[in-house]
Image 1 (cartoon, rainbow, N blue to C red):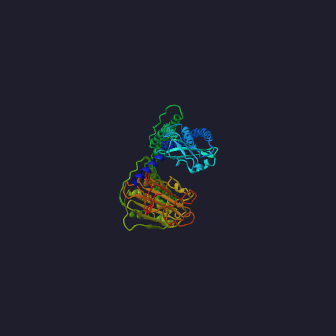
Image 2: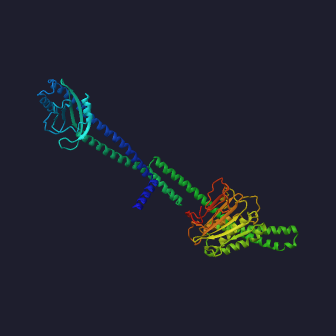
Length: 563
């Protein structure tokens, strides 16, 4: 039962958050209910007050006339013990009651003489016991010579409990004072007030329901075009650029639909224009790269011939031959990278996945860059598992990514060690490349994967790179369904992390290795003790996670979830 209640509450909360119409109708019903309820209470209270006031006015008039009549009758006697006085009291009570003394409905009249109880007996018409309905406070007030009243509930003559308006007045006589009481049943007034309350409540409920229905209809008129606009916008974002809203009428909602359609048309025109420009740019890059292959091959053959014969040349000419050979190597790498980028842009890149042990791949990359590392004075340290790390990857592309990452780390390592760490868990494998160079300034981690971007344009390249290495590495990581992420801080170096699914086609949720290194210090100087580091603008450090668009963040794991 608790689970069902929790699901019901969750469904209600979700409906409340998602439906503007439900919120408007609910607020309208609550507000109108409070307003109508308060108004109904005031009306019912006013009606009850008027009925009671009319009853009191009628009883006071009867009481005044009855007191005058009784005073005239009793003033004929100067002593309370006179024999005819009791008969006169009986006749006066019956006359004032206006009916048969045995009748138990209608107004009840009572005459008492508390000061002469030993001579005069109380008389009531109709003959019913009324002492329980005449309270002591009322008796005391009337006995002191005041006209007083109260409302009491009780039974007379064995009937149902009824509310009575009890009025009492002193009647002065020659021998002293007697008390006259009128007991008027308020059953008719209560019934009238109950009918009035029921009518007001029924009218209020009908009014609230009508207001709720009206709010639902009005909200529907407004919300429906908004929902249509939202659905159309979702289709536009999904690539269906020909979707439009239906324009009906000339009101504000029709103006909204027309403006939305105009915006969609402009966006479609602009997107198609950009797509055409992008296609032409990709075609131009591909065509230029291919067309340069033929003259480059000819120049390469001539340059190789000159380079092999450089020992017989003048030293200046021999040096020129060496420079020509080096620049041709870089030019050839640039053409190769441009062709690779054009294949990614055209969507023609193909992943040749196969079970691969990444430990030998890391060793091959390290051996290939050992000469460069020795030349710049950088030691490459390896932290590799003692067992094979098998993953379904394209070994050529993974080796290219690692070669670019390690080459960049060596180039920017400032003669400090570069550490390569390989880790794995049941669902993913990861490689981190850590250097202790100048690091990345805040915001540069967002630019490091851009094509031809350099942190310091005046810095000389040690490897003669093309400026496309990290861009190609990013595309290789995406092609695997993995992440390529960067972290850096001024003076603390940088760390890049490549995370790939252990099985081709799986979705990544966590990485076996941290992105922010354990030896990094927080902006306030404290050492990092584990867990993701939250870094914002101006903090002096930054992280960037780049991966497939459908990757989802995960909950806390023993390693590090994707930021």
